[in-house]
Image (cartoon, rainbow, N blue to C red; front, side):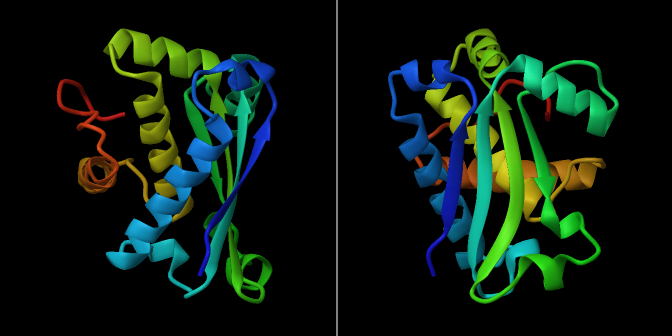
Length: 175
């Protein structure tokens, strides 16, 4: 099985970062899905198929628009995930053949930069954390209750640790 992330750069400022963000995003995605599959954590991706998803690298304006439309929050956020598993026709429409289409994510550069600066953490580490978080949402994980948040946070910490990234929750509240 090969897992593939399609990266769409909506804002060219992403390409000016000191890391090949498209390659890094694909690597983080692949490591996240593989970890989930190897550890039986792929509840929404457990069809024994290769997993694909889309990531738009965007900005506060576009993310704010979508956040307002879909979450009724008139502000930008760091990442939004639109999971196909939430669709009533998920198995029929998104699990055709050998590939499972997990869904779409969009990330805001300005919010990512602002949060990394406030937390005094490397931008690349915060990006990885948000992408892992988004992929978990695509697999059906959520953080609406304390128990869900604790489960999701523990998985994020473990995946990030496997990538050499320290616990993003060590000194803060759950996102």
